[in-house]
Image (cartoon, rainbow, N blue to C red):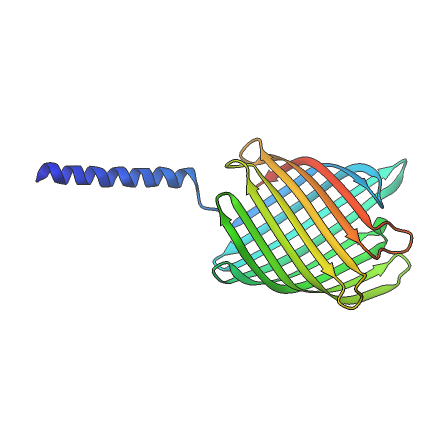
Length: 244
């Protein structure tokens, strides 16, 4: 009897030890996260320039609620003349209702005179769903509506309702490295020819616990750009990402 009890206690102890080690190897994701990107930018399209960029993002999750904010800037000068100036900022609120399905609301601001506008505002809301989250694959989608407001360089303003369809796919290459694709489409519900599509592909490969190499390629398409401007901008960035 004593030998059987000792064997049982030993088995339980080993199980608890293995569980503890597994938990130590894969710590729970912290509720608060922050990243800072610093790197090299090469653009083609409405802006042809080599310059520097910076970005930051802070996200907080508590139960079904997720809140995040972001800020980024691309700025360049050549021969004493500013030839790139793109400023972005935004915030987002997510609430999971049941089994990966929830609602979202967001607001964003952009100023990019080299794309033809002094400022661009988007306020959006809709449904969001996590379709896949297993085997190193994560796929999220969202469907909603946006209010778009814009002021051009000639001080003309435009305001319209657009649909919003977006998806984010992330594939883990290793325990720490991953590739991610983010895409969104904003069709003008009042003028069918006015369609905007944004895409960004990123590759992140950590070189230490808090520092990673990040490569990113973004495409911005506006089927009805401001007069004198091109429809497509392409932005390639490479640099370091600092994780807090």
